Image (cartoon, rainbow, N blue to C red; front, side, top):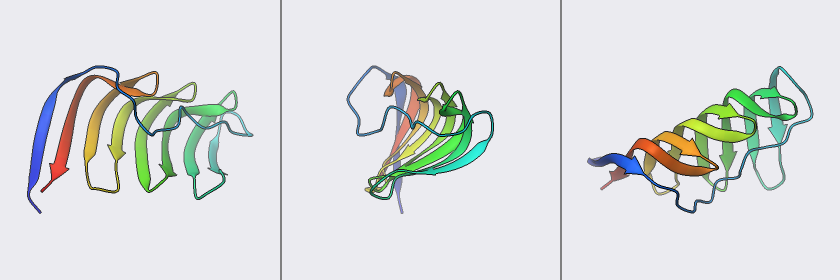
Length: 103
């Protein structure tokens, strides 16, 4: 497949991503299943995603680093094949990143 790439500085924009999963453990690797096929596998601290982890939900996937239940830097993959590799703030793409579109 041919891939087009767009890179640059991203500002805040709405996204379907969850703000970060709440977990039932602390300070360890955890698999946490939400309702409707939402699964988080990764590190947690103080009952929130913290460290490296992957969240699968709504046909999407985010994998990368989390801090206090929020995405920090990583890759988001949509069912359409669009990918965003970069930084996040407050649950939104923010800062440096690259967006790739399958064509």
